[in-house]
Length: 354
Image (cartoon, rainbow, N blue to C red; front, side, top):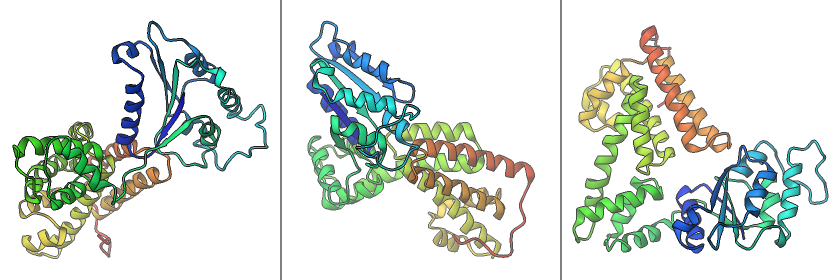
């Protein structure tokens, strides 16, 4: 059997992979009969040889090819014509030959399950058009606003956790719909509630305070140029299921707050006015003011440019969310250190729009 799993939501993609794996039998026996191939390095011959191998003392063999279609088709545009053959110099030509072979059920032994495991793919990707016809396709796009609340309620029920309607909505908002984060937060809420029904206030007490404090560790370290602390905080947040897109958004928010506080301080406004204008809790004003003193207006604009490039690189398919976040953290930390070394920048005539 051949499967093609792709989509933006990594949780759903991993869940789909787990479901297929569970159907193949005992984990211990399957462990020695599983091959995971790097799609950016594997050749058609290596892929086929792994897929045609028979399992060792087990009823099934699993071959997972990660990121192949994005690698071989990502730099090419448009659908390949069904009537047009690839020439010998076309890098897709050997893969087209492999796809043609896989159309024959006799190519793979019945004991082999072959999975093409991808991130987000467009259906115009020429590699997708080659392999989708020979595979069972599973599209794992993120849950929409209508599908997410029932998913949260079902996940809560599996933990014997009761949620009010407001609690469900708050969880969806605070986690930005990230399913890994939702799983983690539901586990914490189940332990905290002790059998009580979880309401909106309880969600905010348990989820938002811890989340905000840990995200501040990341954003403050980035703005201060402490790269080792920033990377450590970022790694911990990602490992705990925080969405990379959410962390990028929080970095954007941090620089916006710096710009607003810097502008208000130069206009000699009071701290309570700064807090309201920048959307800050009162106890955070001094911290953000201290960070803002490191930055001139030119540096703030450069930080915005770095974050804009990170966002566009994801939307245009040049990088995945985590790669874009990591690069932005490196660049922003370097920018902060350079700004501290070269001194303050002179403010331009007009403030940037926050």
